[in-house]
Image (tube, rainbow, N blue to C red; front, top):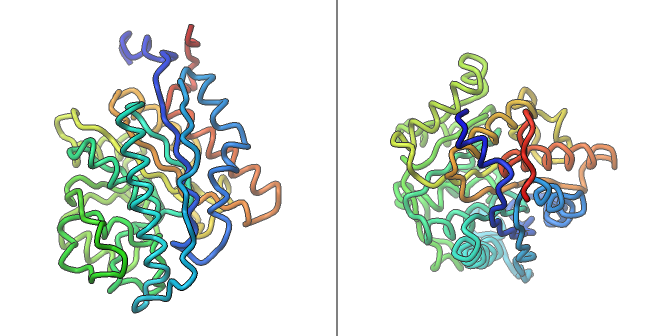
Length: 321
């Protein structure tokens, strides 16, 4: 790291925070409590400690549509559409006023709205999807019909021909290309998702790849794939199940053999040092899962990782004046 990178640590920078308390993208209640659980756990105070000038925009208002019957096998399509459009508006406003946004969820269907909102401001941004799951099923390939497993299919332009019209989705349009997406940490990919990834030659790095190349090598491969010039804004969409369940037990679809806190902190610190991290999603913290010790451990691990995206460095940092 050069001196310019070192001097940037601790510099007070504006950061907007948006809560997206959505749970209709999957079957278990509780992710709607994720934003407040992370706030109560001290997330914003920790970020301020590392030099962030926080503006908390509160939670996106999500009115429940009670008669939201499934469309085919897709569950809660109208609720997800409404939430996505509202989230997109708030994220766009946040990025235009603060320049950087942290969106705390909420299940991973939240990323439909965060990516839409980000693309309105920075259409050339790239997306690093850090997750155990690819989340690029379409309504036609999904076995469950749960929309937290489909967000990327709705925002990628090349997948539009494979996504049938859904009720309430008229305002949701694809906004990025598949070449703008790279995955890190995959270890539970459905056959239909694998077919999509291979069909479009997308950049997907599994835990097998991490084991073979190390996290430093994989992060470099992912960034080189989506941003070879090293100039584009970065959107990180981080599902806490990307980490091993020993670190984040309070999440809905845990998969063993995941990233360690150490590996996630490395990713976060390296991306922070680029100066191009514009948007971070944190998805799938569910305080209804596990006992209080599990919840506390999940919140602690998640907050620890989040702070490294915005200034916390394990080698130490210079506090903002």
